[in-house]
Amino acid sequence: MRISTIGYNAKQGVVNIGRNIIFSLASIATIAACVFLFGLVFSIVINFNYIVKNVEEGVTMTVFFEEGVDQAAIDSVGEQIKALNGVTDVRYVSAQEAWEEFQKEYFKGAEDAAEGFQDDNPLSNKANYEVTVDRIENQEEVAQYIEGLDGVSNVNHSEGAVNTLTTFNKLLGTISLAVIIILFAVAVFLISNTISVGIAVRKEEIGIMKLIGATNGFVRAPFIIEGLLIGLLGAAIPLVILYFMYNRAVTYILEKFNILSDIVSFLAARQVFEVLIPAGLILGMGIGFIGSAITIRKHLKV
Amino acid sequence: MITLRNVSKSYGKGQPAIDHMDLQIDKGEFVFVVGNSGSGKSTLIKLLLKELEPTEGTIEVNGQVLNKLKRRKIPKYRRGVGVVFQDFRLLKDRSVYENVAFAQRVIERPNRVIKKRVPEVLTLVGLAEKYKSYPRELSGGEQQRVALARALVNRPDILLADEPTGNLDPKTSFEIMKLLEEINERGTTVLVVTHNREIVNAFKKRVIAMKKGVIVSDEQEGEYHAN
Ligand SMILES: Nc1ncnc2c1ncn2[C@@H]1O[C@H](COP(=O)(O)OP(=O)(O)OP(=O)(O)O)[C@@H](O)[C@H]1O
Ligand SMILES: [Mg+2]
Image (cartoon, rainbow over all chains, first blue to last red; front, side):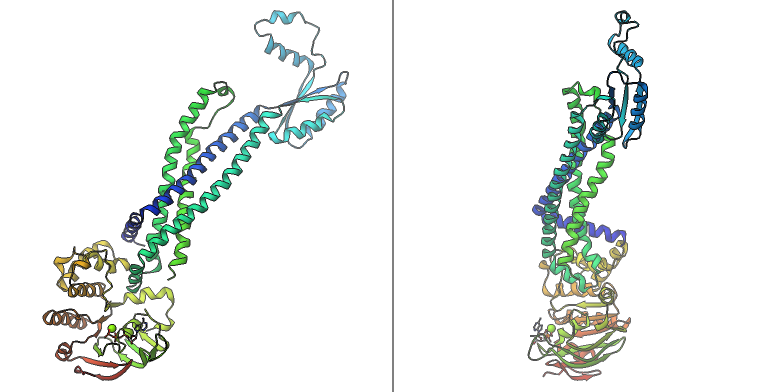
């Protein structure tokens, strides 16, 4: 198609929207809701994943041994842990090292106090392995297995928080996906209605166009453009709102829950929106395109 | 240019609107089609534009057999045929200028061509000053001339005009017919349906007379016969 033809048909598409403003606005609003929800969930999920990943990197479990277990048994357990699926790193911490680390952490600035223990390591049987797993979900399983090994007394690991976070993340994703699909369907339905009203109004005109040699593409173009424009508007509005909301929300959360700022960091708006903007626009315009395309197939059999 | 072989068209039961018609019109001819109301003249034009399908027979126009024409080739075919419809079929919500420009947009002419060509054609039919008016603001004759301008603007190979002077005074009718003659002299094949006796008799062209879907006479330099 020529540029001037596209220009002309784009204008007709805008005229269509104007003529049928109520339906068009309803369609725009539904798409906006759909894209807004999508953007909201996307921002939350992508940040959760980011946080979980950060936490994951710092999480290890510690394997302790029963009293009196000899070095050979400890080495054998170490070999068995290394061989496990999902275990990425195993570090042996001898009793001496454990004690030194403990001193560093708890006797900071009061090294004198630790002197008293001098040659009598209170952690003499606290040799251990620090085990890192690749995924937080695997931690529980790995821990249970290791606990069953000969000579192992117990395994310390952080059960609760991270697992809950992951579960919540999945749940949120699933529920939102369902709602988005429903909104998607409603939006397609509304657009389809909007376009079919437009086609009905232009029935005579379309007939005349065809009799003087208009191609199918030419007859259809204004309606496709109408759908795409509605989709574009429907997507642009929530994306702009989300952009401003995002920065405010991040600032608010970090201020309100001061303690979080040590452990948690959020993605920058730019990182989120360089994915979200194209995705949202594709979603909105996709709805518009699908809605108008199916209607045209139904009503503009040419 | 136009060949009908044994063509019939029935809308339902009863008397067909076109009844086993054979017709040959050569390139560059100027033909009047006359006949009583209901004799099938408009039906003939609709068949030629492939707006309607014949119930029987074959129609060949411009070297193409219409019955066999593929759907996606119809637009291209129609672009070679200019039509003045009996009921004008103007777009009510577009100005005179847009109604004519519309025919050019449909065939994807660039804007700069449209801007030059549309005023030219409007001048030709004597409507240059009314280019901003809407169809409802025009008289019947003026609307008819807009329809004619739209049919001419793309310089078609064939012009089919269904009573193009039906609403015009004798003087304007004569001028419009002169215009069609001029267009014909530049190579366009012209078929004019008319009830206007004076014009038919004055122009001395081929006259095809129809009655109940049948050609009852076909004369070169013919006269208008009442039947
Ligand atoms: N859409 C239609 N459905 C049913 N019958 C139709 C239809 N169109 C035309 N007819 C019938 O076909 C016959 C021919 O009609 P047509 O319009 O071709 O006549 P015409 O010669 O153009 O008449 P006029 O001079 O009044 O315009 C008429 O009897 C008419 O009633
Ligand atoms: Mg007629």
